[in-house]
Each structure stands twice: as C-alpha cells, then as structure tokens.
Length: 142
Image 1 (cartoon, rainbow, N blue to C red):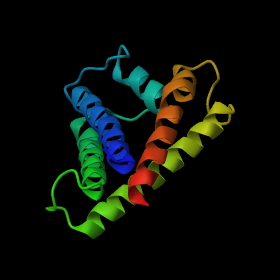
Image 2 (image 1 turned 90 degrees about the vertical axis):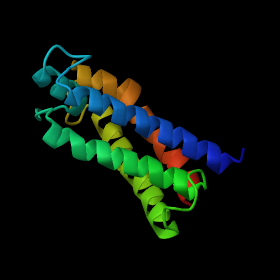
Image 3 (image 1 turned 120 degrees about the vertical axis):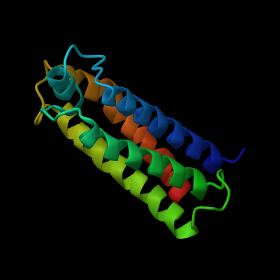
C-alpha cells in the first residue's frame, strides 16, 4: 500500500468516526456529557443545539470529505470526478489546518478557560487529531 493510500484511509477513518458520533448525538443522546448544554460546552466551548437540523449537515460534510479523500487516493473507483476529489481533499486539509490552528490558540489559554473540559479535550484530543488529519489529507491532496 502506498503512503497516500494509507493517509487517505487514516483521514476517512477519522472523519467516519466523527460522523458516527454526530449521528449518535442526533438520536438525542449526549454521551459523554449529562445534557446538551454540557455537551455543547465540552465539544464547542459555547452553546449550540444538538438537533438533527444542526447535526445532519455536519454528518454530510464529514462523509463527503471522507469520500473525496478516498476518491483522490483511488480507493472508491472513478465515479467521483477528479476535480471534486482534489477540491474535497484540499478542503479537508485546509479545514483541519484551520481548526488545528485555532486549537493551538485555545491551548495557549486564549478564548478557553484552562479549567474547562473543552480546554482539556482540545489539548489532548481535538487539536492533535486535527493536525494529524491535516497532515494526512495534505499527503493525499497534494
């Protein structure tokens, strides 16, 4: 297996798990939090409703990004036009870079309370995962 194929699988796995978590939240469940307000603060650092109307578009974007990256690496056949696969893979890389950069700012304590669950999750999970995602998507896209 070539490195860009492996990188595409890593990206698709991360985006796929994220999509599944969002689908789970669409059912009304709030794990790992006790309620939607706490979940929103933990995941986003501000309050947003965790409703299908909000979450369904996120799931679609995550699945589309995973599909584009896999298509760019030649893992899903040629039913996705090349320019869409290229643009999608580049969008995933740029989006993950932007989120990773924001995560670094939050890790410095700017805009995030150092005692919050969001701060700890951002530092230990969200930002590292976004930087891994950015690197892997960049390998595929370029």
